[in-house]
Length: 148
Image (cartoon, rainbow, N blue to C red; front, side, top):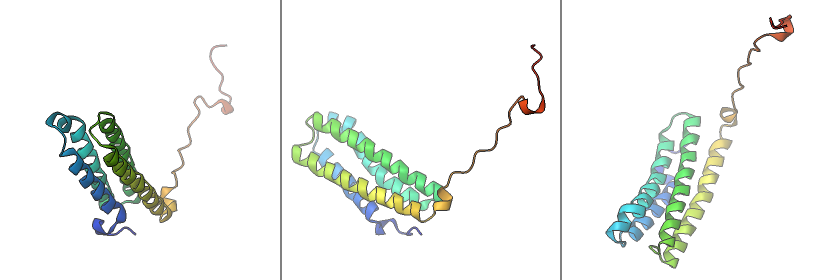
């Protein structure tokens, strides 16, 4: 059973903390850097928390898991922009290490959250069998090609 209040989730709190850390770092950058890599970095880290909140709003189990998986994509995008910012010397070593640590910890907690969501409803996660395809032409019924 999923909690009604997203703020009671550790994973959501961690996502908010990461977004706030990123915001603080980006606000110290020059306008050009803020408008390019900074804007994307802020947007993706904000989307991490938004995707977790969206997952809680989903009624169906599959929709919930899909939204949680989307969060992992935002985490990977955030890592990409952090690497770009670090290589462009926009993040100091200490800042980059702090953000990387936050992302790594959030990734572990998010994966555990996804696993727990999967354990609560295994039968809903089972793939539906594919419909049986009809062989055409039905060779087992004596069908013979008109080409000789």
